Image (cartoon, rainbow over all chains, first blue to last red; front, side, top):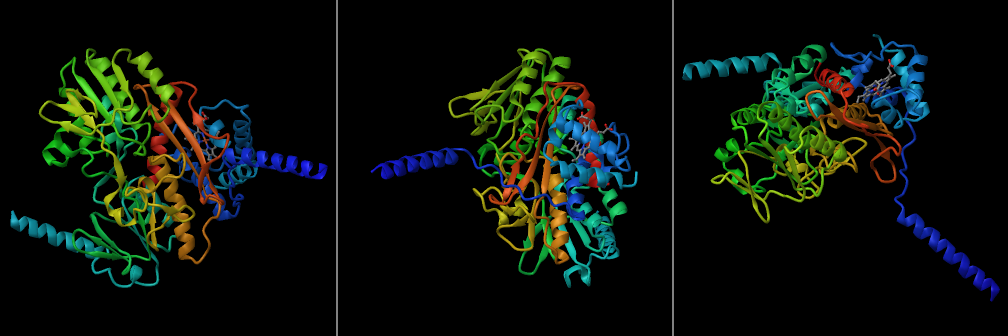
Amino acid sequence: MIAIARYLAAAAATLAAGLAVAQQPAPPAFAPSNLSPAGVRSLAANCAACHGTNGKPAAGSTLAGLAGKPRNELLTAMSQFKLGTKPATVMHQLSKGYSDAELAALADYFSKQSR
Amino acid sequence: MSMQRRDFLKAGAAAAAAAGLAGCAGLPGGGSRARVVVVGGGYGGATAAKYLRLFDPSIDVVLVEPNEAFVSCPISNLVLGGFRTMASITTPYTGLVNNHGVRIVRDMVTAIDTDKKQVRLAKGEALAYDRVIVSPGVDFIAGAIPALERPDAQARVLHAWKAGPQTVALRRQLEEMRDGGVYVLSIPEAPYRCPPGPYERACQVAAYFKAKKPRSKVLVLDANPDVTSKGPLFKKAWAELYKGMVEYRGNSKAIDVDLRTGAVKLDLDDVKGDVLNVIPPMKAGKVADPFVTANKRWCEVDWLTFESKAAKGVHVLGDSTLSAPLMPKSGHMANAQGKACAAAVVALLNGESPNPAPTLSNTCYSFVSDTEVVHVASVHKYDVAARTFKTVPGSGGVSSGRNELEAGYALNWARNIWADTLS
């Protein structure tokens, strides 16, 4: 009897937990980062709209280019944007879309592009 | 006259032959090189064409586009405000040819034959392809605004939602309007191209009126219940910069226009104006019709490759796609998709597997006056369970307030994305 009551209580708890999970949207199941050369190249392509193709700014750009800058300088800036310790209009919001490993790979990629 | 025309046609045929395009309906790519035909030279298609060549220079890339030059929709609202010229938002296609070896065919695509793997052109030729990328942007849903089926009505009530001659014509209507007149902007139900675009347009027209026709009004009729993008920022701008000038009405879907009285017809009343700017509801660009699978409007794709769910070997990108959740139909997004699609097509043509973890990002800058800007930004990653893109939790957001610093960054964005797309 006690066993059954305990079983029922446990079942009810499981059910309640299940409902709570069902009511919340499932957290995204993002694919693991692709840090192969082609994967990083595609990741870096997202930066081109504001920083130029492969980090080389278009004529008349007001933002400095990313291409050929020291890896550490780039990574420090991006990490600080992500942490919110470097003032930004937009980079604090964009950098949070990338994992720390992705930011490191991006810094590596842009540091190796010719200016 | 007929002589001149014949000479012109002959010259055209000679140019096509010289470019190696005559009779190219034979072997794909005319030999061992794989050929990709890109349909549409907007933000999506032009970017895809350039990046195909960057990622794999052995691929023969042919871009089919009817317009002589690229005219940017982003920034075109500033032409309506009188703060920018058409020339400043126009970029030639020559960069794609000279810097990247993309071949450009100035023509309209009439059909895509997925059995023969050919793109048929209005001028009669056909282009063979190994893979085709379809990026035609949007078209308007026929019959949604019945009176606008007539060409003379279309010339009077403009949409100006594709930057070009309509932008110039709408600016002229605004210039010719009397001071004290009413400009009515009708916005269709979402999803439509450029979610914040209509609200930016209301700001730009108001900025022009404030400077030149201060007794005039901007009346926004929105089919949506509320401002669909950056709502608080736009409403603050209307209240603080254009007090008493901009009036916003939600849940106000246009069902027709009355050309005789000069009114936009809503369900319950008619709204008269001196300049009517009606943006009809949208669907995938016409050439993508065979690949429309959702609500008779949009094309569903496999988000890892952008391959159509309706046809093999056909990739659809940009505004024509059924957007992933929270993904805007924007020039920036089409540019990002163009690169992701190009990478996938290159992988497939080389017998490799496409990137299993693509990332896309977007930023839409809107000018709320000639000097102040607000943005919305997002980062989208591929969700393997849902097989679609989702925004990365904690990333993205909007400006904390309108500001001048970002006006500089917005123009910097324009410069760089135009170069990234076209040179």
